[in-house]
Image (cartoon, rainbow over all chains, first blue to last red):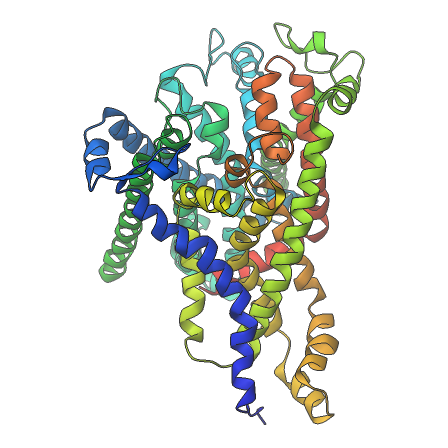
Length: 297
Length: 281
């Protein structure tokens, strides 16, 4: 028996959804359109009333600036470096947590805590650990003999972005681990038993049973992480401010700095619009890659 | 034969034990180091080679934080913003999730992906014009700007979580109650809501974590101590008290505590909600 919706009841869902739709329109849809519009104006953060329409000039200037290409390159390094390492570390973590051992439940519970920690806090902890004079990481590396003298990780151009990436990998890998673990636990034990009887070793079992079975989760989680990592600028902003120079500035951070340090909102909007389009291209490339792979199989 | 097998098995479990310890250290060491730093006397922070344990633990950093800085103000602001966001976002999401779970309507299958796509836009794209919008309606540098923004950005995932939890409650219960003469509101209040308490708590914990931790909107919508939340406050401390790491880490510990507390209690439900969608594909 199903409930028959009366004429009057047809308006109930509309009524229930109205607040959510209203907020989304006002706080997401309208600002997106508005920001695209701003990218065609010469507009100062402090005097928005004096905005002047300049057509595509902001985009042309963006494409002629060296810092833009630096930021684009940094963004690519940041996205690929962070997501791939998070995936590998997360996979290792998931395989470990899948094993049965004492205290497993507690460790699983603790695993997601970095994900629930504020970006500023992550930045604070890692800035202190990576400190060039009193950082614990320098101390540990020197004791083990990997480095001879302390390295000011966040203060020199060639290590600054890498230092922030380490903090981001630490924060993001547990998310991968938890998602992959949940997927692994859904794979039927019978598959492994059958493979064991057929003489497949652990490596073969992992490669031919685990990976194909959890593929949907790998695809979705990686996509979520790609989006999140590409737009994530909190850690860089707090740990290095994009510096020294622009050595650790990514596209979203360049947009932020252009608006809030140089007060040029029009140019900042152009960069933000580019970042959005760039992200869509990355995602479609990622999806195309997957499609190509599934055709091969 | 049996003996070597047993030894190999024991060797394997020993290896797993070592690896598990490594994983745990990887996850927890930054928090541990932050806590240790926060109870060190300030002279012991800057020694070379560094001192791992404090000679005499002190809570001086914590005392200074409350006596000499704006920290209490930031703490209060964070509580105001977070709890208002929970109430606003929670009630809007409950209504929407109820509609998604219990009604058929045109465009239902299209509306939800649209909500999720909104998560793809970089915060900076939205911040630039939201800044002017908030300024226009006169809420810049007040908690209201943050409450509205946080509530909206927490919505898609909260609705998604709640819809899943509502869907898990069999519709037959609704129908049985309807036959007994209960109206929609009574069914919602007396059946759906009580049965989805774990889901509700998990969803609201997500909103709590999101709002408590959020940084970019909080940074751009507040300009001084009157409206700053903890993440923005900590960020400004990092500029002001550059050589007072005991103070900074004390602030960090206190900022982390509420989240770790709530997360520890409800993590099972959150993980369940997080993984449900992705695992189903």
